[in-house]
Image (cartoon, rainbow, N blue to C red):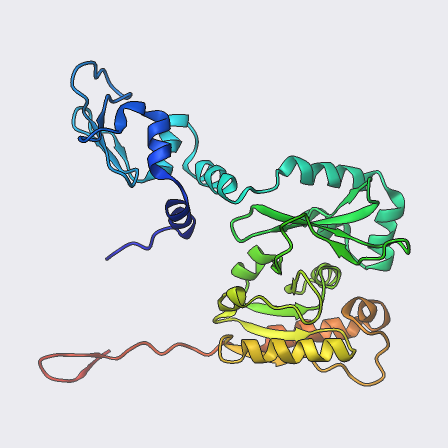
Length: 318
């Protein structure tokens, strides 16, 4: 049976200059034979390590192997294979350094006013603040939310307005404002999804144990290249209770219909105060408990396997 290749390795192989990587370790590789002296045994005369342009290698002298370009870099640098994948991928996408994210979380820990706003105005638990690395940027006086992709690399930092002096709700790192899902990695791992409007609502919902996901944009945001990520999932849409939210929720419903296993819009009972999920968490916490119950009650349909028929008698094999 053919093994499925790691999607991260596939991306690295398709986007990297593999020849350049090989040549950086073996400058003499660029000849017709593509054979080099093997660094893993005494190979002083005839080059015995053959490396093909994909990064795969085999030494005819000692039997040493590289299964792909990631394995080559891993062995040459003495790194763990998983670490090597992450390093190569981070370089390719120019990931934002973790040191920058940590600096913002450190600043937030010292800002009592910002911490109080997150806890008492946005109803986001300290545990969730820490898990999703919410921070504070002193220069702009904005709160920060790092946006990670499914491979756990930081691809953007959203600088969120929270003071009256902040005219724009959110600012992106220059050149990184593409609409993305937040938190993307959680979406990959979870089957039941509550699609909400905005990162703050997503973090508030997660403080109540709800598997909430949002787009990094307004109610009308959608990025079609991420739609397949909802395949096979059950999705409940819970946007703000206003006109923009209603239009956005209907757009989301139409986008997901036929892609997700199940999709529905959450009904907000009349008389419930507040316009968004964070408001409801204060005014009517029982409503969020109801959301949780609805998600847990849903049963995914059982997949019926293909019947096996005996080629001799034509009977079904149980």
